[in-house]
Length: 270
Image 1 (tube, rainbow, N blue to C red):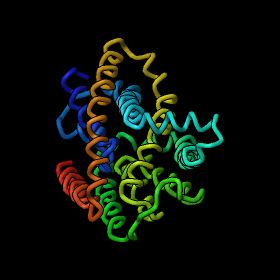
Image 2 (image 1 turned 135 degrees about the vertical axis):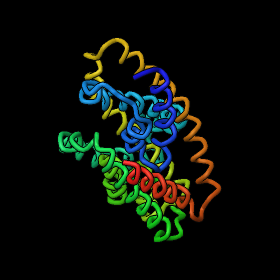
Image 3 (image 1 turned 90 degrees about the horizontal axis):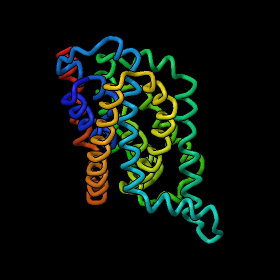
Image 4 (image 1 turned 90 degrees about the vertical axis):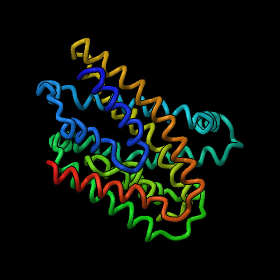
């Protein structure tokens, strides 16, 4: 990939990973829509680890933005007084397990559908339906993260497993599940972002070693992409959290409409 292609893909990744519009679908669709003539060997052997490197930049941004939370979680392990932080850490751990287990068990099958732009566009349309239905069918959520039950945290973790299929959004599915568990918009978004870091880190551990066998220019572009993606993701998570703090009605509607428009146009184009 060229420097321009890498930066463009990283910019898109930094926004779409945190916004509920499926970063993986955009990673698959972008080369197709811009007509990039990418090396088939790169697509087969290095494209997925390359995208994971972009995700790693996003994970770094999330750890930085929610650094106070993660420091509180670490301190809670050694303090008997930090009950709320210890409870939240337990819920994050429980919510992480379903996607990690499903991803590990179904890695080969999921890898087979990863390069399909048509399937990514189709599932992006379905993602819009999930976002719209999740917003319209939710109750008036007022609960905070520490009030979730273990079963509800597991359910939210299962919901984010949808993102293992390109086109479904991890943050979208987990935020919607948070709505249905009674969380407020802000609490649902915060829990979704807390769940993201360990999932992305786990994917990186599996995929990044494959970049070690890549050519030096591929490694260089992946590193640049990771930095750009991280910077954009830091801005994106700030914007998204402010959006959910202020918007308690139809917060998901603009994202649903976006998924329908982009998914539909991509299907027509492809």
